[in-house]
Length: 400
Image (cartoon, rainbow, N blue to C red):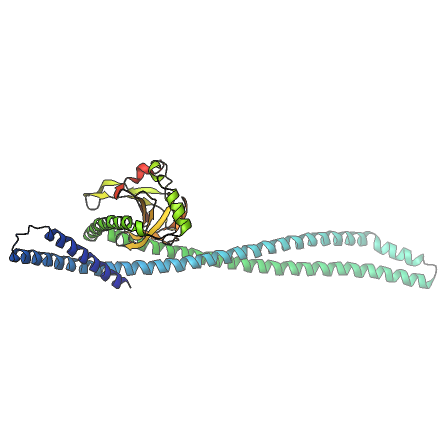
């Protein structure tokens, strides 16, 4: 799948380059000779062959890096799943331990009560029982009364023994509960140790991922080709905007969507400095000319690149209609929203796109989430604003 995608990208790139060069050649004076035209075509072919070889060499490295990145992503996903399960198990164990601790407190309370009762009975028996027993027996009026009193004293003694047995049983019950608690604590410690191991493994995987990304960043030739591709994509994006403008007249929307879209006519132009940010984050690359520290060259950015956490929601900045959902090399998953009157916003490097084509969006509706598709700089959002087919500085339109 990756190889097919790369071949497709290479083919598209070659076709666009060929068309561009042919268009340039087509502007040559009419008096050009056939031999001159053939020489130009041969020059174009050699240039295409050279670029094709460069792309094939880059393809091998890119394919390897993408495969490693995808494998690490899968491993990180599985480790995260394991961590979530472990956290649930630890929570359950903590609840069970809490229940056992409450039971132990109840048993201790009962044990203390029984102990105090037993101590009182022992003290009473020691002080009074023998004297009372003889006094009551000698004070009996007849043999039957003496027999009844003797049985009563024996029952009292049996009651004391029963209290003692109950005390012993409670002690055993407490010991069993303590054993269960100890086992639960041991299990909790084992799970905690396992969790720590999983966390360490996750950190190592993340470190490997960072090293891999840093390797890509350090590869200046690959990064240069990527930036060159971004410039080409900018031209493609301008053409897409122009095509959308041309197709607008024949576009068929749902009547309610069409009504909403017409209602916002003339509104976007008044939003300069008032638009909410599409995502919370820090600007990595501003609009316009900026110096790339790796290539040590000045580049031009047609939008802004916002560093944000992966998975953070990306929101529509103003009401409009989704007119394009596509994948652009260098930009990844891209969504374009039409705000009428020739104004468009572009959201790139998305994950989990949550809108459909020709869907009407209100300001604040979630378009997708921040991702890494088409990015060599980690999770970020590339955001652009177009007006009159020209890129506008988003920093002048967004709230400060």
